[in-house]
Length: 76
Image 1 (spheres, rainbow, N blue to C red):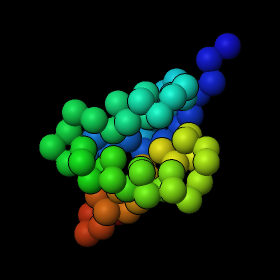
Image 2: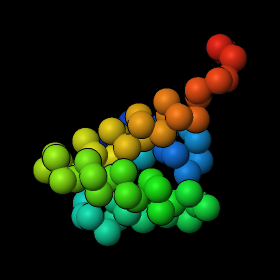
Image 3: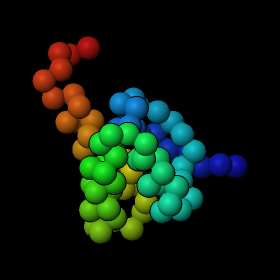
């Protein structure tokens, strides 16, 4: 059975449930393909320096950008 994770995907700006990455390369691929991907990957790598679990790092990276993307947005 494939493990899944729920996170805010900063490249798509949506909360989603997806298959969890099995490697560092897969995690970085999940953050790639967007004009701001360099920023997403930089934050992810900072998180990896503090936490060993790559899924937790992706979730934390998503949370960081969720707050940025929602700042100044009306409720709802």
